Length: 120
Image (cartoon, rainbow, N blue to C red):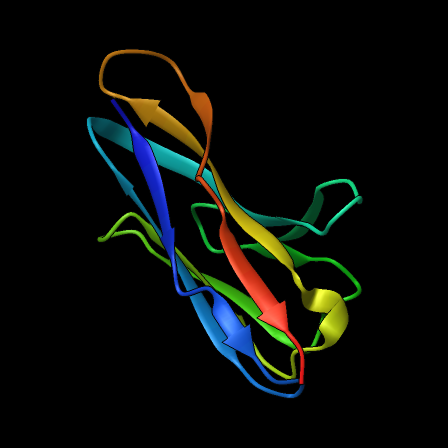
């Protein structure tokens, strides 16, 4: 069984920083693209940033220049460094990854989500 476990969410004042982590565990053969999504109350889930297995990144216009996605393939972990946070960044942040387990083809997995609240 494969799991994605997020950590690092919390409350921060506007202008502050947080770093999210998401570790994949289980019977993993390979991991492809990893990504962070977010969902604010009464809004649809949206892509924040993604990173391929070779390190190519993509991010939403709303976070460009403030958020940085990275990964450590030796730890099966993806990170999201969030700087200059704004109240509109408040949301539940979800980790997503294309994982090839040792026992099947590639499956898209989601983490359980971690709350990020930006307010004064």
